[in-house]
Length: 137
Length: 103
Image 1 (cartoon, each protein chain N blue to C red):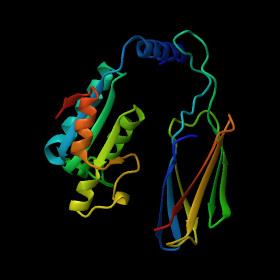
Image 2 (image 1 turned 90 degrees about the vertical axis):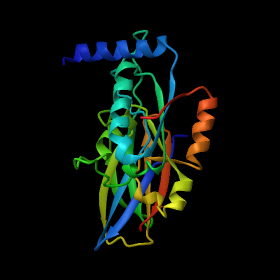
Image 3 (image 1 turned 60 degrees about the vertical axis):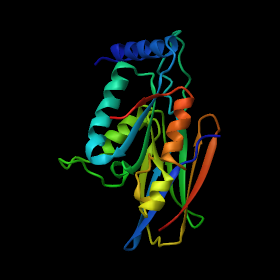
């Protein structure tokens, strides 16, 4: 891609940013095995079509596993790369602290990009009442 | 004030591996906004790290470093309980200092 087309793309992207209101979306993940790969793909596609969407991923129970250091999907591909790529695009990944207590996990076991929330379900309820769309992949 | 850095320092053998995730826009000054005006450059210019107060790393950064930079380095002789401090100063004079304990 030439520099000019790159600059043009950036200008077009920022114009789109200014033009439309931002959609707020929650992705709810509570099972890594069945939801994580699918959910990350959904979010990537979501941002490809609507780059301005403000996406928050709320994880609890078995859904926190893909945010742990060294986590891999069923085919052995690491999760850290795709997750930090999405963080760079503005996605927030939040981990339920009740789950940490119940499963005896420490915050240090998770990748640095992850954030924490006192309760996953409360966070989902609050975000939804604040106008976020709810998606469970 | 910028968001805090996330710092992790883990001792292994006679050294500690320090990983730092900084939160910064790192605007290059080359981009234009929707009205065609250049977005002013805004980037981290100087990074320093200290081990128990003694400087072990200084770096001069420029606009080519990506947004929300990640920095990893080893500190020889650092052991569990030691303090690692990381500072940055950006070209607007904004600064940030955060500390972590080696585990």
